[in-house]
Amino acid sequence: MVSSVMWQAAAFFMIMFQCSVRGQISYSIPEEMAKGSIVGNISQGLGLDLKRLKSGKARIFAGDNTEFVGLNNERGILLTEEKIDREALCAKTTPCALHLQVIFENPMEWYDVTVEITDINDNAPIFLKGEITFEISESAVTGARFMLENAIDLDVGSNCHLSYSLKPTDNFVLSLQSQTDSDRNMEMVLQKALDRENKKQLSLLLTAMDGGEPQLTSTVRIHVTVLDINDNPPVFNHRVYKATLSENTPEDTVITFVSASDADEGSNAIIMYYMSGNGDVNDLFMVEARSGEISLKGSADFEKASRYQINIQARDQGGLSDSCKVIIDLTDMNDNKPMISIVSMSNSISEESRPGMVVAMLNVNDLDSGLNGQVHCHINDNIPFAIASSSSFFSLQTEQELDREREAEYNISVICTDEGVPALSSSVSLRVQISDVNDNAPVFEKTNYEASVVENNTPGLSIISVKASDADWNQNARVSYILEDSTVNGVSVSSYVSVQPDSGLVTAMRSFDYETLKHFHFRVKAQDGGSPPLSSDVTVKITIQDQNDNAPQVLYPVQTGGSVLWLRLCHVLQMLDISSLKWWLLMWTLDRMPGSPINYRKLQTERCLKWVYRMEK
Image (cartoon, rainbow, N blue to C red; front, side, top):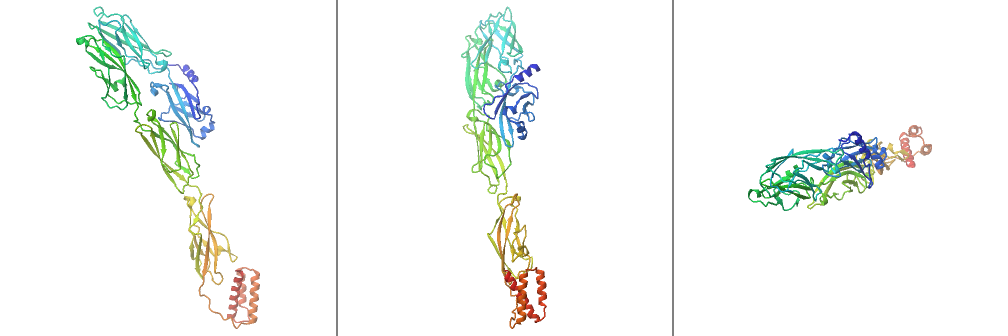
């Protein structure tokens, strides 16, 4: 394992970042770094102030929900959350990278972050078998080849470049042949004829060494049993066989055939075929021992592996064998629906939101490749929203101005479809509520109101109701009615009528007299509860209806002296503009002045009052 000093050196030697376009940043770190190790300064890399990291509530989003890397908002740096094992994370895939997003709120935005995990030499080569056994005829000719299974090294790059040594080399030497897939086929080649009578059993030690620093090794013991009389090994028609297979092909489907021939006769010419390889190959494929038919026995998935290599050995009854390699390439089928994840969403937005406001952020991923993995998303028609894409992220945005009074809530279906044939799709429903602003004033049901009241009514009589409605919601739609200040015959209108604030009911504050007031009008204001409030007003006209409440009076003959006196007093009182109380006190005194009959004085008093009222009106 690498020392702590070498770990620190590797961490400082890592490639810090490279921005190809705005919003994308890359880092490189070696695997197995200690928890809390610095990955990179995200604040400097993105050119963001630390205040933005805090106010935007910056956080890391990993699509597979595995949090290997965390964000320290106080320092603006990325830190490892745990030790990262590159082999567990990516196996043989190179480069091995974590694809993350740094998510900000208020306003919503994101940046793509790629963290490449580089390999260290922390895995020694491994032989799958504890020992290897061969039964080889003593008649095997020099140059005969015996296939050996390669060791497996979980590392990548130079750390997994293996070299081999075989000891002793009295009878056998190693042969490593490069194949078209850049792998090497290892064989044990007979360089000196075997003599069963001289030595019946041979024991060799095969050592595998990787290319890492420091170098790691592994060994396996080879046991060779020398058989008597069989001088022709099987020979394959081809060293490499190739086949193509569609993923999701039914089990028991025949893929290809391998064939070998043996020049011997009888039992020495009977060939049996054997397959060797790792666990995945053995689980997926099988070879028919006598025919060489290779068939599928499991479920092949392109998303797990796109290519398989199978080593086939042909062995005759005398123990001679030959080997070949079968390369099977898988073709992708559109068998994965797009996967939709809601990264962030606002459940409620104001109706005064401007076009382009981000409402929700979605991460969409399709495991297929090529066109099968290309995804397009759309939403239902005739709504003031649109969807925009950036890499695997999609954002739902407002496209038009909103009006809560027209539509208070939207149920938005986001449908994501790939380009496969046939196409596969997934959907998710988003519910967005539109919050109200006070943008509508109350509106009266009528442009004006009219009502009539029979004179001599009782105070408190309900006359008419005015009604206004407000298209807004809740407090913004709560209407109150207010009697606007004005005068009737010089007196405040509030002494004539009142308006109930909640219901708009107009009631009489006094008893009306047709002989002094035939009609009057006033204005009522409807005001909502918004901030600031909005209002509108309407005119209300009240007509007084006459009743037969006055008996005929004898006006002639009159007493001239008294009549003139009362008329002059009426002029004086009208000019004085005195209060109502003093007015009635004076009239009460005048009514009791001597010099004329009582009935006549009362008649003159009433005439004087009516005359003054008419003059004021």
